[in-house]
Amino acid sequence: MRQECIYIAGPMCFYADGYPRWYVMRDRAKVKGFAVSMPNDKELKLDHEDLRKNADTIFANCCDCMNASTAILCNLEFYRGADVDGGSLYEVGMAYAKGARCYGYTRDKRPMVWKYQGGTLRNGRVYDQKGRPLPYADLPFSPNVIGAMKIVEGDFDDCLQVFALDTEELRKRGEAPAAPIAAPSPRRGGGPVIYLAGPERYDSDCLEQYSRMKALCRERGLEAVVPTDEVPGAAAAESDDPYARAYQVFLRQQQHVRDCDVLLANLNDFHGWEPDSDTSFECGMAFQLGKTLYGYMADARRMIDRVPNLGPDHEYRDACGCNAENFDYPINLMFSSSMPIWEGSFEAALDQTVADLRQKGLLR
Image (cartoon, one colour):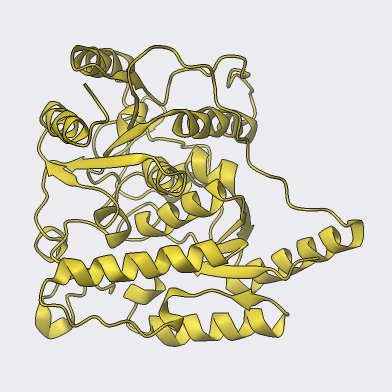
């Protein structure tokens, strides 16, 4: 039986006392007999005047650590708003794509409707701060998080204990962890397939939005697939059980990522100052599978200007006490170091994406 190697994910590196916590987690995992692959174990040279190159160095090291791991244990606590750290879910997407065992932990596994702050109650329904019916209100996290991970209520030690028990069961039975679904769906046309990842999937008029977005892609020689598209032969998400329904949605969306050639991600803030969880997961999965990635944001200023913080005298701490990255990038380096991020609307980003694909010879 192989020795499991755990990748410990979460926003701890942005906490004021995050690194000591991280080291304790590593040591507890080692006491349990597991190897640990942590991005901060290796001393990196981060003295480049171009801050983006320092971020790219960190990202490359994260990729090396991920490729050495067989499992991921991820902190799913809310981060800068009522959702999970996008960079951590990017890493979960990477782990899932490579067939690693995915575990998460949270102190509060209640449905989102009870955890989301700032919502509005109208006619017996909760709406988020942007006026949408609260997404995945009957689940603790988004469908891709629910579908990809075993989620433990508790802290890191609780999650580690469950992971250790599950590992023992696999050892007793001589079983290997289940491999992810890998079979591609039949191609639908002749052009490159572009998957449009983003929070539009939760808008009440998403079908109208997607129809317009698909038409714009078609005009430019791209075949667009969106999160709401069905997968041929896959079961529809019609169960009354929200967990069963979420898992079917997850299976559909992860299959779209496997089937696409290009992923264009809407990385605008969702709940707080992070992209939506499903898109974050899909970006990491697409990167690990070798897809071509692009992103866009309405505001692509550097993060320390975009995320409210107390400035350099306070290590750019935000209202949650977490450090806002200062790498001259607009968003967490997992996204910024793995794709060009255009500023502007979807249509403007699509035009820049098409130009880049043509320059690379990926589109006529």
